Length: 209
Ligand SMILES: [Zn+2]
Image (cartoon, rainbow, N blue to C red; front, side, top):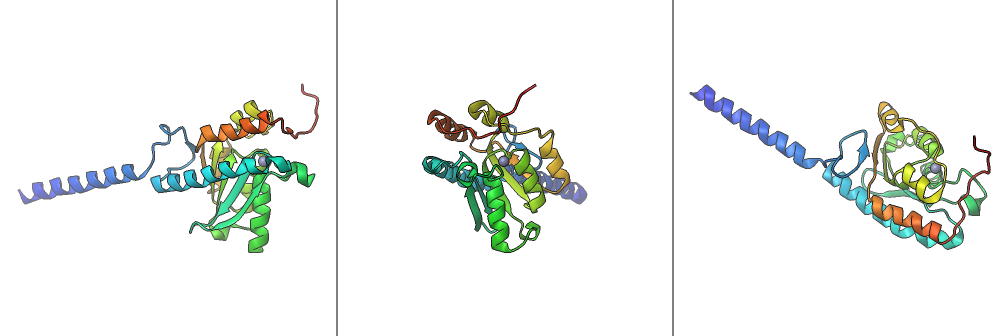
């Protein structure tokens, strides 16, 4: 009898723990989030808050010829380490994407080329392009949160995001967590605003096959 009671008790505890664990994570499919790891509700709330703020700030620099992308790097205590917008046109530098600019600022601030000991996260208003995905990988940043997917960036603006097959799984093998598709609808609006204001789509002229 005692054995049976113990067994029932153990079953209840384990069921309770499973339910608690499931409750603590968001349903990625339901939220249209592409990811290589689970995401807690707290993580999602924090990412939503930061990305919403970035989306609000991005258009403020359109008049200064800044591009429609903004990136911010935070440490694991929620401190802002660096924030930068795409400055390809004002900086006359095709590598001045928001993520690259933010990484440069963070590395200068922390006086190191390797950010991995700092357990940093980068939040971006759009999926990193081929160059920025590379930059993030070599920077030592541990988590990537972004809003709009590359396919939407390309269809709304005409920017070329480059060929990045399976990059989210590739990042997983390097210990980098990626969470994409956060606050997508408002993210698309920022890009649409940039285009409708007639701003420059900066890219090299090339012959296409
Ligand atoms: Zn980029």
